[in-house]
Length: 397
Image 1 (cartoon, rainbow, N blue to C red):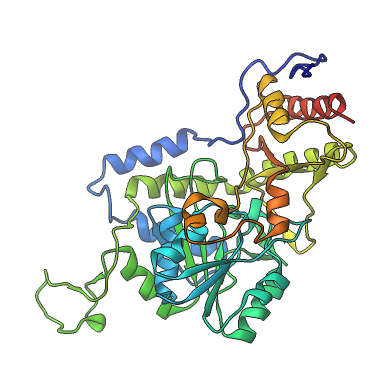
Image 2 (image 1 turned 45 degrees about the horizontal axis):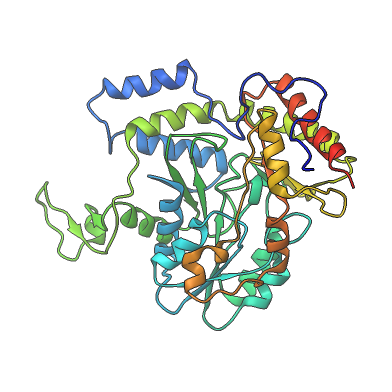
């Protein structure tokens, strides 16, 4: 007989607890409302003000705000000159955009396996994937924890590769005291609603390289410039502009920008609360038979976007789906991050074989993302912990 999902103990959470959600307060609403009353809804003064604020947060010289995190990755690849025949190494444990941005440019994503304890891309696996066609590396700060930056940067320097960091999960994280966004050639952020800060949809690219910065600006806005120094035939006509490269309409609106700027003011409290919840989860799950906790490297001061538990099939008699459903029966809704990118049908059709990254595939079969967000209450945290422990006890072999 199949074991039931509900197996006694305290009542399930009275209201559904999602794995992630945004927090919007009156200051955020006022910021957006002020823009709606202003002359500019897009391409207005909010954009440079936000970019300056983001540079102050990260320590980067330049920031370029765009319509979403995928656009950030895409224009970073454009600025890097990724083209047909180029290879770019990334991790399979990420959202598809980390690889798609390479494909958009005609390049080939190459997937390097992960460290089985930190779940981030393994520097040794990166080195093993390098060929004469390799042009860049896109490491992902998975769950918000920094990658082994020094090792990866050294590999990139040794082989003359550009380092484009995917920091979609990692706003607020520091590596050896340095904010993510101040390291590498370019760093890409996402401001989707389940991230630590949000603009609804939105993204940002940071860089210290002025030449890359100018390319990012062009790629964001149709390849069009009004800067005479970039024109082929400069003119004094006030309406004159030139399209000097192929670009995209990846601009962020002033409404979204105002929201993001207001959210940035709350990043310290958002970060502190997430750290509190992560600490409680770590303490609660470290000695639970059947649960494996993600290893944290000492160099990373992490503002975590996701909290991922790994189920141990040697201890638990249930499948991951049974555990997922049991959590849902407790009114706690989990998610899985991520299906290895090369196992998605589009990439399978391109010839990427299953078994390419054994550590990543093994991890995917075992992980669940449990609730983590700013407004998660202490009571809800304890309900999540209780549910995980109860289900582990019930399905213990």
